[in-house]
Structure formats: C-alpha cells, structure tokens
Length: 202
Image (cartoon, rainbow, N blue to C red; front, top):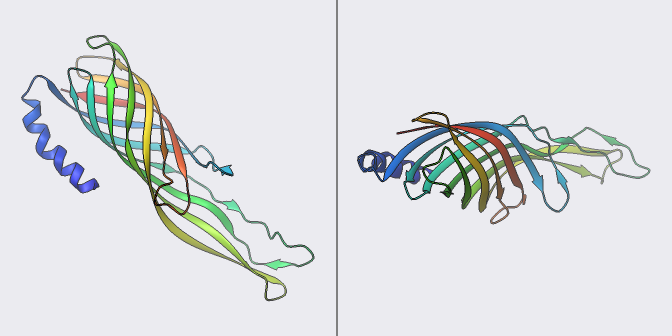
C-alpha cells in the first residue's frame, strides 16, 4: 500500500501542479513520539522524525501520505517475578522500534490567511519490534530467555495543528497526531506524535 501511494503521488503531482486549484507540498518534521498501550503502560517519549508528500486544494482540503519513525525506544528490564525461587539470565520487554505510515486528509481553516488551524483524519499503519522474556520454571534455578517479535497494527490516525506561512513557499506547522494501531495487532500499541513540520509548497 505504501508503494501504491507513492506511485500515485509521483504521477499525480506533475499534472496537478499545472492546475492553480492544487498545490504540491513536501514536508519534514521532528518532535517526540509517545508509544503506549492503553491497558497497562507507556514506553517513554523519544525522538520522532518523518517526511510527507501532499496535494493541497485551495478550498482547504489536503491529501497527504506521511511516514515517520520513533528513535531511541528502550525496552524495560523484566524482573524474575518468582517467589522462593532464583532466576538466572535476564531479559527485557516492550517495543524497541516503531514506525508509522499514514494516508490522511487535512482541512485547513482561514483560507488566505497567514495562520491556519487544521484538523487531520485518516488511516495509518504502525510497525513495531518488541522484546519479550519467557521464564522457564521447570528447572531450578528458573531460566529467563529473551526473544523478539515483529507486529503490524492498523487504525485511525487523527490530529490537529496550526499552519503558519513564513513566506510565499515555506510554512511551519506545530501539530499533534494520535494513531491507534490495535486492529490486526498482537501488541495493541498506539503512538502519539508531537512535533513541528517545515513545508515547502508551490
């Protein structure tokens, strides 16, 4: 699906750029990524960075394909958790990698103004790599063994922000986005991205 979306933009942008109702845009952003699981815990707020390509209509609607990644996730140590029995080995649990690809629609208010609030809604995919620790208790002392699993979840990608035009071709946009990646997922993780984007538009 990601390759399909990229191909769509590659072929659509040249034609739409000749129509003054449409404006192609390229964006890059940086901020924080808050990875969490609703039912039990969070996994920190490390660096998040991404890029996006979009087509903006003068009515205020924008179609965007965006990818980003959370850097520096650190799984937590897994305790032994057994009473009256020692454990050997060690392990960790939690995500160590998280990446997002989303296809969304923006709506920008205050067309023609330098400052434009906007809303975001669409669908996204959350890819994660997580560590898990299994404790084998059929031996004494018990043995802790670490393993890794990869997961993919799909869900709504929602957000809001403020677009500020700095010139006739450059804008910045502080924004917040939330992706719930529970559908088709074993890990049931979600991610909130808080960042600022720099956009070049024609």
